[in-house]
Length: 405
Ligand SMILES: *Cc1c(COP(=O)(O)O)cnc(C)c1O
Image (cartoon, rainbow, N blue to C red; front, side, top):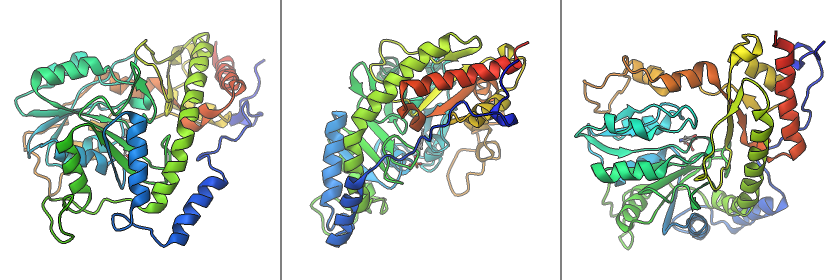
């Protein structure tokens, strides 16, 4: 007899609460001080914003960092600065958050989807070249869940075809590829500080780069087209007000102090959970190669094989796992090209060529990840103790025992 599942009224396997965000009095004090100073905004009185930008750039090993309102606008700033023109094509993965692709639409460009690799769920470099046309201008690799893309392969393709590389590092604060911080490897790295992300101020985003011209353009676009050294009411570029507040910057500086320790903890827990799950038939953690010197597990992903769980569907499994108290989720229900935005071509005022067509796109690895395979454990759970990882494995085993025939 197996134990009754929590979904069916049995006791939960995991009873601990995993809270997020993590903060204490020092965050409260930092924000309080900003409020009391009366200097809430940038750039008139944006010393804390500039301070955080310097800190984040130094942390990533990049020359420049420019904050902005979120991790979607940050992609748009990067694309425009990289010089995309209407009708240009930008290569994106289908297994990511919508704005990786919709930011491309907002630049009047065409997202071209390239399938993910079945062992990493990151864009499969061996499939990129087939998607390149004379209109391709950029590639946006997403370090999905905080797992580094195969950047050497992607940079080599980009170099050969003269393409820009914009890393979508919204999941990847503090993670590394061959000892280098993600986001610092391509032309631009883009991050989000939205509330679920590994570094957060509720909302916010940032771009990093080593390139002087990209920096100057993204800085201008973020600040209503003003240029450094220019007059207040002189506007040179078609930007907008995408600035963050001093309160956000104060919070981010404090949160950044916690990031390294949190990242190491998630990384260690992830390695441990990999070991524990390897022993469960029908559960396969994603692959980690030697190149992954640091994984920040924004999402810990494993592949689920229903045939080892008596045919229990992934969605039912994920529901049962969450009921057991594991902060987990079935993940994206569809690859991005299946979204109504693309299927119905609801491109509104954006100048997307008539020839763009998403109805015939079918990328099997992304389909399989969404439909049957991928299960996510969320980042705040990866900040737990070793015993919590053991409890996650027990919860999975418990569901298996209840269904294995
Ligand atoms: C969260 C996220 C974004 C967008 O960031 P926001 O700050 O929510 O706008 C972009 N790309 C990926 C992969 C994300 O997960």
